[in-house]
Length: 148
Image 1: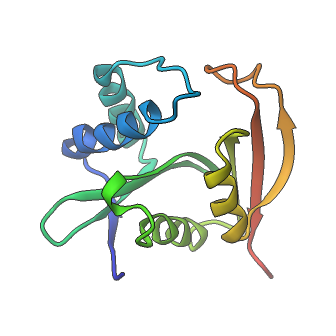
Image 2 (image 1 turned 180 degrees about the vertical axis):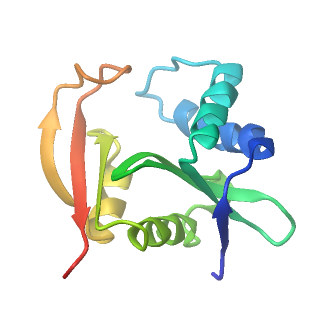
Image 3 (image 1 turned 135 degrees about the vertical axis):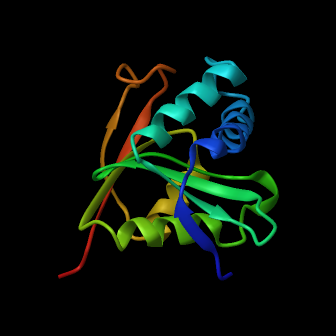
C-alpha cells in the first residue's frame, strides 16, 4: 500500500467519527458510552488540537486515523473494510517517524490490538484494573522507543 497520509482537517471530523463509532461499538464486551454526535465532537476537538493524521484513499475516503498527543497515542482506528491492508501499520510508521517514543493503552480483552502492537515493536509496560478509564475495563500499557 502506498498511502496518502496527511493532517486531518475539520471537515474530516464526521468521517473520522464514523470509523471511531464503528470500532468502539463492535466489541460485545465493551460498553457503549458515547453517542455518534459525541464522537463527532470528540474527533473535532482532537483535530483542532492538531493531534490527528489520516490515511486517505485516491477517491477521498478516510481509511483510518491516528490521534497523538506528543508521545501518547490516544486513538488508532481503521475502517472495517480496510483492516489487514496495511493502513494501521502505515499510521504507526508515520507516528514513529515523528517521535522517539510512543505510548498507549489498550483493553486487555482486545487481544488483536495487543498482537498488532507487539508485532510493530511495542512492549508491554504495565497492566491495570481499568479504574483509570471511562469504560472501567482492565487495560494494558504499551511503549515503543526508537532504536538509537
